[in-house]
Image (cartoon, rainbow, N blue to C red; front, side):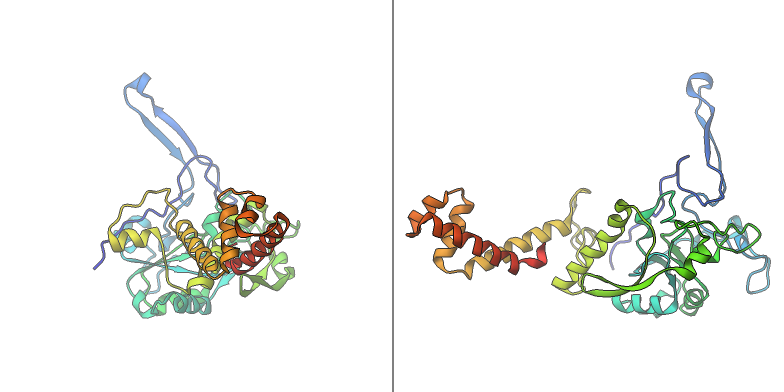
Length: 336
């Protein structure tokens, strides 16, 4: 049995933390200071659901499904929010309503038997945490769940669901849309309410790597786009080369009990090693004269000196060099 690891999933809390559109900004002040009173105490004023938090039944209902009054947070057992957890990666686009079909597909792709989730905490990794910011991209156009996903969680006995987006709910199921007493029906990037944008949004098939996915176009900065897409591109490239076997620094720590520095990028290191191995293989397959030309040029020899060593003119070496570079570039395309 592998060792258990406790993972902190929270965003750092501060007065500047991104918050739900109608929440007040947190205020953090000193009630006492060391210089004046000999002790340091702080006063924090904020809405309870600011930042990373856990919802109790009372947040959304008066009565639970068994008929009893819905419980507040302090009435919930601590193990309702803690325990053995499973991370389920969902390859979905922003503004997607997660359904039971998405969850089934994700389990199949990750090799997880849904029946094994009974009594466990299920953490949904949608990639939205990479967009965590005071922005429309994170709030208005967030991923979320609905009734179909909820029934799926109940069916498989999931104890608790954690999510990396603004809420468990899809934004159009909340007051950001046209729901509840505090309905805001917020304006989107086009100037229309997001409920209207959703009806009018352009839905099309796009290609990410070798996969075709159904996408909805939403406004985002270049930085937000690359932050969200880079992990998807890396994963797609990795699967093209290796299939679905996972390689990570966490796996190295757990399987081999090795200490890995925090700044060590295992994937990048492995990719470099694979590139070198592939390059050596390509060089070995070349004719001796062509391999000698590339190795001498790589060592800093001039084209004239290289030509003299292999019995060719400088012009002939230059011509071969460009042809060989083009050939290697084509054969090593997957590593670009």
